[in-house]
Amino acid sequence: MTRESAFERAVDEDGFMTEKELPPLQEDNPMRPKCFWLVRTEDVTGISGTGIVAYGVMFADGRVVTCWNAVISQIAIWRSIQEVEAVHGHNGKTRVEWFDG
Image 1 (tube, rainbow, N blue to C red):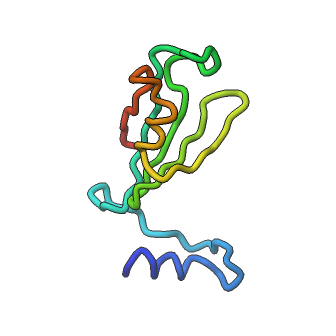
Image 2: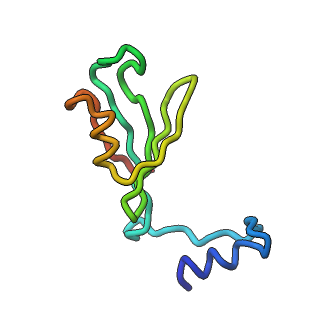
């Protein structure tokens, strides 16, 4: 069974998830999303602070979602991890750290 066929069976005719579960992704599956933190060593703007400032996921197609680690938080969708680094990297003061999530 493919992941796509499992998904089709887990969604009802109105497009809502049913009680059926999708099969788990194997660790070596190339479709498995990759998790990361954005770790900031110096806060050049004085807004985000230092340490883990955001959480993120990169999908198999290269698109990325970030969620800021703050009281007032923002979720953003990016076309690539390079876009995230270009906007939030601050010339190496913020780095992407990958982890198994």
